Amino acid sequence: MGNMSATEQMSKQSLERRTLRGRPRRVVRRVMLSLFFLLFRMRLKRIERVPAEGGLLVVANHIHNADPILLSAACPRPLHFMAKKEAFGYPVLRELLNLVGAFPVDRGKSDRAAIRRALAALEHGIAVGIFPEGTRSKVFAMQRAHSGAGLLALSAKAAVLPVAITGTERLPLNGAKGRAEGALARDPGHPGVQILFGEPFHVPREIDGRKVTASEATEIIMVEIARLLPGEYQGVYADALAAESVRRAR
Image (cartoon, rainbow, N blue to C red; front, side):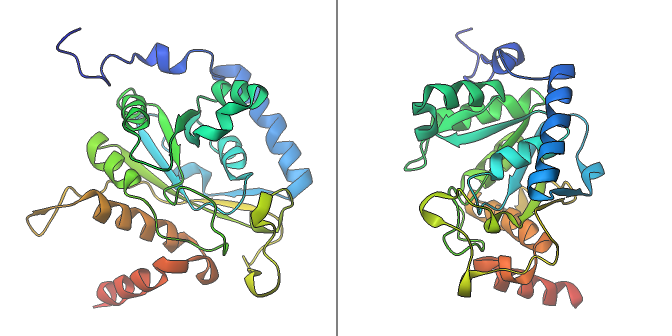
């Protein structure tokens, strides 16, 4: 044990302890999806793109409090989310978070414990969910992301699955950030809520013979999310995506 890394010491059994999986999760997921369809007219697109097994880093834009719940239900695999540590301060919510395999992250600093937990899960073939922006966007469009997603992708060498969430900005119960109204209103091009799964990919470890940094890896990830979103949602990554499109066209 003394020579084992911190991630190696975390067994898959310990990571999945008390979490909802297998048939119980499938039953609960069906109920939740039916409820979300009725309440939010939620629809899933390209769900067949979700790999059935293996470590998977699921990354998405973040515009509403409900995004983690909706994405957890949408994903056919159990999804262990990084969740803000403040949420674990409420006993009932903490139990629900533990049930779906969520684990706390301190968004105000580089949380090494959360990174180790996420790496261990990925190395054991578990799907890990993360919102690289760290918090909900105040303008309901993509904002600059932290480097944690890129660090995980490079360290775990796991596939990355980009996901676009649209329509949740029109839902109530979004705390102080409220709904997207007036000048902040968005046109997702569909009624209700939509969750669109992109193509899984691996972040390159080198580009032109130079090692890719965590910040550069995160930029690559965010551009892939932006690629799935309508223009009004692309925010600070719209220019990077446009420039890349020009380079690709050549």
